[in-house]
Image (cartoon, rainbow, N blue to C red; front, side):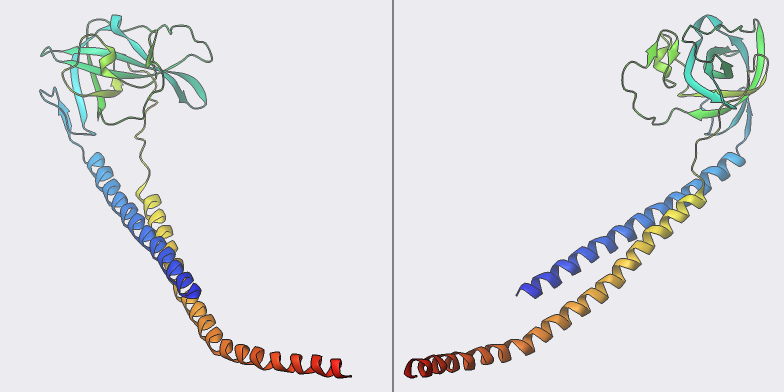
Length: 251
């Protein structure tokens, strides 16, 4: 019974590892496919001039309007080429009265925690940038807004809302600063490599299942053959010892 329990435990353990490896491998494989589609969509994203609705994710958009420099906030802890600074976030009112949130680019500040100073172009500007939708972000522990610094982009930090859920990463036009933003996307090849690793784990678990089950069954059969003989030998040994002791008494 004990060996049967060990065999069942081993099969269940290996089966769980096989299921885990297969499922996680399929998940990573699907993630790789999704990333390929996303990168392809980014590469083929349309160029939209003066959009009147929410742009498609990754679209290149051209908007004309006026920066609202008095509402500038700064995205804290940005780096560019080893330099520490902030991202400059400024609302822009376009010609249709739509409010856009624009990331103008990188401003170096070093280790200083003083409020950064940046000039804002006056009058009408025409800018081009990449549209990023306001997707799920990592949680912020503590206050997101400290003075004029944001820990992560949050449109709700401005009292007056924006026309669309997202922001524009400016890369050309008046008022542009050095570009710090790049899409933070794990390449599809890495997801594929992870999928292969998980499937390798499932393969190893399958081999371990076969080898372990074979050995446990062999041990059970071997013990099943030797146990009756051992019991018989013990049974024979008891009278012999008794007889020897009796002979000693007689002597």
